[in-house]
Length: 143
Image (tube, rainbow, N blue to C red; front, top):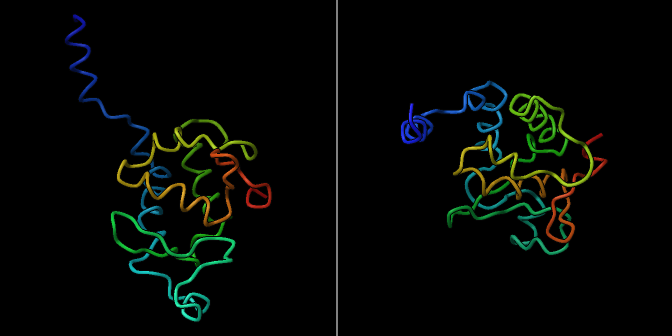
């Protein structure tokens, strides 16, 4: 097999790790983590949608459409549990529970159209904190 044949063959090969159940489940979880429209929780309704002073963001815009985080299923511990399973399945290693989150590695097993949801979910759930542009795992969320 010459070099051209090897390169062409690589174009059509799909990483089998992407079809593992925990990876598929994590992508489905990302799709369902946000609902359509702005947040309608008691705080957001009372403030008219002004999130000033909120520790974590409630409403988001993806592709120009308003969305809100589904609190019942997106606590930091829930996000961490789903992420740990997908990470282990894809990388065959445990997710490091401190330090910088390797977002590039997470993106390897997340569908490209869902990449824009990762940082907002990780930040809004309290799983990570943005420290000088780096997403750092938070010990209380990882406990």
